[in-house]
Length: 366
Image 1: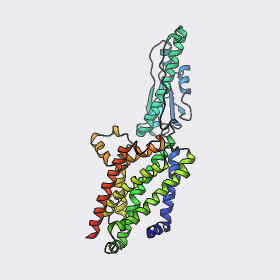
Image 2: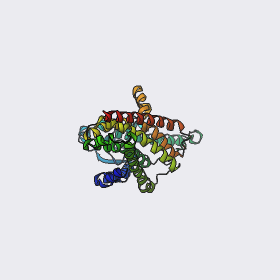
Image 3: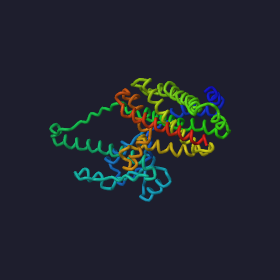
Image 4: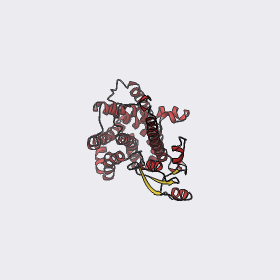
């Protein structure tokens, strides 16, 4: 174990990478947002009425930014194709006339479909703005008719558990931390073993009196220590200053993280037995990493996946770790309360580590 620790500490590039992942990378992730941020708009107002201008004034920073006004219809495609704006709002000529005549009118929203996610989110905000305008319009009409006090209304009072302020930066920072743990958990143990294979020292170790677990254990413990140092630095240097609350027990967080790293070690042993050099190691690691990430529910809701992909989710350890880590971090749940996810991750870890150890012994005993 001393050898592995010295090799890691002497590798300045790896040290810098670990420091980057545990600090700056997580901080940058927390500053991102899926909300529209100065979403560029163009207005094509053919009506030029007071009502249309009232609506345009509602599209204000920091969510929207009216970049330009259009005078001709042919300008719409040019502005979107050149990426100058991401959406164009068009008011028809009889917009105000129809409203004043108690007729339903419409406005057209043309969005850049190549940026589908941002356009869909922005469209939701635009719908909310128009809905609020409609509510104000109806209230004014009812008040003018003298029956405004007699119309009942349903008021929605939402309350969000776990993240009551809906701070998206907290979630993005945690997601990035979990992604870093997954990446390092797969790559570090794998590269440590493959490096021994490339330098020819693994054969010397295998013919020595040492047992297989005595060869593997120092590498596993060292790399677990490295990943735990990443978690520790991220918790107290980045997440705490950002205000991310740790509602549950830090010891329970360390326990579920230890179990998750143990599971990833089994996957790493399998990769090490399949790889002949460092290049193959990196490629195979990413081949396994991407399904683990995308089949966890972190980026795409599990319910949105096709049925056959939902079956594969059971083999993604990150799915269980997300439930456990979010439960401890933001909800304050105990491991006993989340025993199903804990037992599922434990089972996956024992199976993967056993198979990985068997494959390692078989591969290097020949």
